[in-house]
Length: 124
Image 1: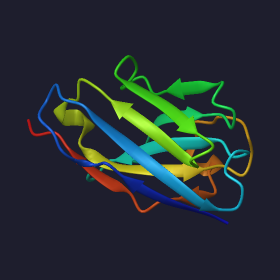
Image 2 (image 1 turned 90 degrees about the vertical axis):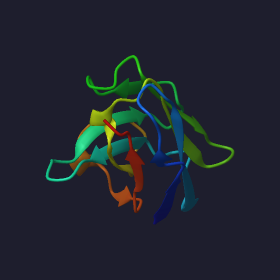
Image 3 (image 1 turned 60 degrees about the vertical axis):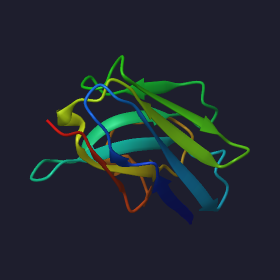
Image 4 (image 1 turned 90 degrees about the horizontal axis):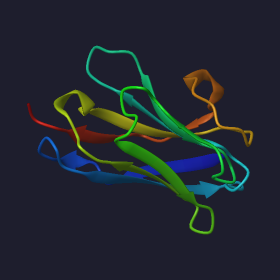
């Protein structure tokens, strides 16, 4: 089992920045690929970003490309999502997720472990 706890969400004005953190505990973290997803009210869960176990491979979704960056610190068992130039359409609950395997992936059904989520609100 891997337990995940997100933090760093909040209210930020359009154009601002936030950094989300996801702290992992339990089974080994360094061999798990990690991802961030988000879900806005009445919308499907959306892929945001993923990172391989080593951090050497990263992908971000088209809607956040050029604005969001994913990174990880295996020594701290933490994955980060740096969000810049935030827009009202970025408003959502952001979830951290872990795979059982090492490769980055964008499908939510490829992730076995999920955090409780953290709210990000960007007023219009």
